[in-house]
Image 1 (cartoon, helix red, strand yellow):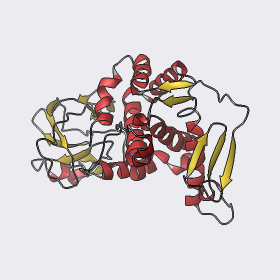
Image 2: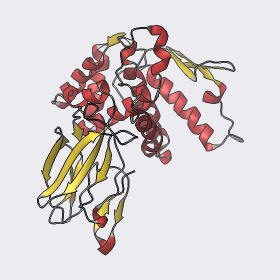
Image 3: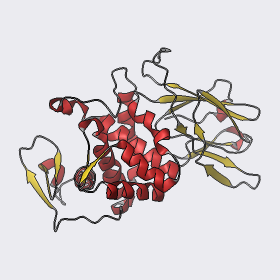
Image 4: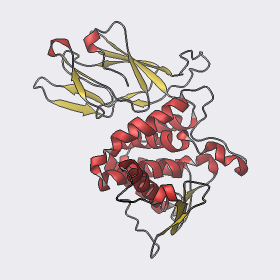
Amino acid sequence: MFDIEYPLPKLDTLVAHDFDAGAMENWGLITGRTSAFLFEEKTSDLLAKKRVATSQTHECAHMWFGDIVTMNWWTSLWLKEGFATIVGEVVSIDQIFPEWRAHSEFTTEDLESALRLDAKRSSHPVDVDCPDANQINQIFDALSYSKAASVLRMLSEYVGQETFLKGVSIYLKNHLYGNGDPQDLWNGISQAAGVDVGQLISDWLIKIGFPVLTVTETNDGIRVRQDRFLSTGDATDEENQTIWRVPLALLSTNSDGKTSTDRSVVLSKREEDIKLDISKPWKLNAGREKKRRGPGACLRWKIELNLFRIQWSSHARDMERPAAV
């Protein structure tokens, strides 16, 4: 996958009855508790099988992300845990068990858990200062794992998975058996993609929270506005300072009825107007969830969230408001 073969002659797994962590990615010897790695074909259910499979692939991914290349300090814990989550639990599982629909499950489980935590005032940046190594257990949470993985998936969809993997390969090769930091990763992906991805993605990791997008149809297209989302719904002006760069993945329909997705469209302001023929089917965050039909057979789209919430202006007609998850 990354053009770097596993360098050791073998990889063992040791299961222990009494093990503090769920599992641990020791180089060449994965260790973990019985519930993470033992499966009985005749009596265990599908959930147990999924837990064993994802535990194994997550720890295997760590052989590259964490062992072959290690983050410089715990501040960038996400650099290994986010990758192990998206590469191990989604990309790898999707190739081994495509019937499990790992990408959909990632959205309903990992992404939602990250959004719930990040919607609180008590949240913290993914790339969080951790001066005392004795306190690192506090940052092994849904942000270091699931939000980081969601950011990486968003970046992969923006530049294309093949380009993304090529960039990650450059990053790993440049830091084999050494340490790396986020800028090293952005440099590798930027080299592969030909665009500065660090500028696009950094605020998602170094700032707290995520935006809610308000979408309003206009005479010439749509108006999209971003504001910080809080579960309490009362973000102050001081809390609403961050302007994220939001890839919109805008799907539109031409005169022949054919659809296409423009992944280069990025919301980089507080509010922006986008020209679009709204008389034909369109969608933000294309590639997610299912389409639906509204009254009068006017096709509109249900939106599955990426790293942002979407709400629809009260000025839009009811049949033009995709359901936000």
